[in-house]
Image (cartoon, rainbow, N blue to C red; front, side):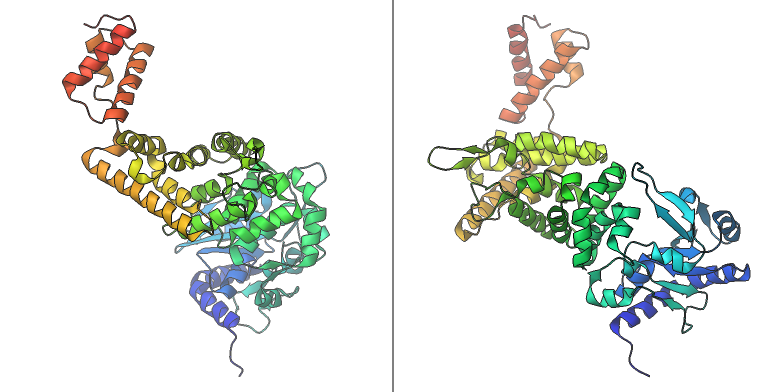
Length: 481
C-alpha cells in the first residue's frame, strides 16, 4: 500500500477528530433515508490540517426535515439561516451548519441571492465558489473508497495552492459577485495564487460588486485583513479594480510619493506599515490595528502640495485622513468602536514626530499624548513604530530609540501619576460648591480649565487648585463664594 501524502494524512487525522459527531449525524440522516456530506471549507481545511470546530454539511433533506432530525440529538439549534436553507446546531463542542442542496444567483438589480434548492450533491458542488471548496466526504461511511467526492479537481488545486472556479469564472461571479472578494480573502487567508482566468474575470466584472450589500463587503474585507497574508489580498483588490468599489482610498495612494520615503510610493509604504504592525501583534490578529495601518496615510492625496525646490508636502494629512477614515468605515457600517478607534489612531499617528526626540518631551506633552490616546495607547505605540519604513538604518535606529525614550518617559511618569486616569484636581461637586453655581455649561468650562492645568503642571495641591479656579472665575465675571 503506497504511503499517504501529507494532505491525505492531514485529512484522515482531522476527520478522525470530528468523526464522533459527524458519523453520528450521518447515521441519523441515513436511517431516515437522507444523504449527508461534509462539504466545502470543512473538507478543504481538513486537508490543510486546520479544521476547527465549525463543520459544514450538505444534505438532500429540506430544512424542515433537518430540524426534525436534529430534535433530541442536538444540544441546541438555530434557524437564523433557514431562508437560505441552513439549519444550525451544537453538539459536543462542535457548531454544525446543515444546508439543503441549493443553487443561488443574483439578478442584475438585486442585492440579495435568489435561493432555490438543488436535486443532487453534484449540482450543489457545481455552484460553489472555488474548486478547493467544491469537495465533499460522504457520511457516515467516510472511509469508503468512493466517499471522497472531487468533481472539479479541488485536491490538485489544493496541492498547487491555486484558486480556480468549478466552471467558468464569469458564470460563477455572475451568480454571486461577492465571490470576487472571496478570491482576495482566500489569497490572504491561505496564501494561494489566483488563476489567471479568474483574475481576468474579476477585472472585467469588478463593477458587479455594486449590487452587493455593504455589510457583506465589510465582512469579507475584515476577513481579508485578518488573514496571514493580507498584502496579497489587498494587492489583488487594487490590481483588479475591485478596491475602487470597496476601499477607493487605497488605490488612490499608488502615485503619491512620500516626502520622507522617496524610494517608494505611499501605497507601497502603507502595505509595509501593515506588515510591520502585524509583526507587533500580541497573539490574535488585531482588526483595529491592521485597519489603522491600512488607512493611516489616506489623507495624503488630498493634502499633497508641491513645495519650492521640488519637494512635496502633506501638511495635516493625519487630520484629513482621520475624517476620511471615519466616513469610509461608517459607509461600510463597521461597528462604532472600530470606527472611533481607527479614526483616533489615524489622527494621532504623527503626534510623536511633532515633539522631536523623546528626551525633549515635557511632562505636559507626555500627559496629553497618553490622555488623548486613551485605551488605544498600546495600539498607537505599535502603529507609530510600524510607520518607520525608511531604508536608512541610522535614521530608523534613531526613530526607534526616540520612541523607546518616550515609552520610558510614559512609564516613569505613570509611576508618579495615574496617567491613564487623569482628572482635574477638583471634581464637579467641588467646583459648584466653590463657585456657588448650579449644574450647567459653566461647570463644564471650569472642569476643562482645571483639566488643562492638570495636563500642564501635573497634580496640584488642593489650595492651589482652588486658587486657580477662583482666578479663572473672576476672569469670567463670576464672584466665587
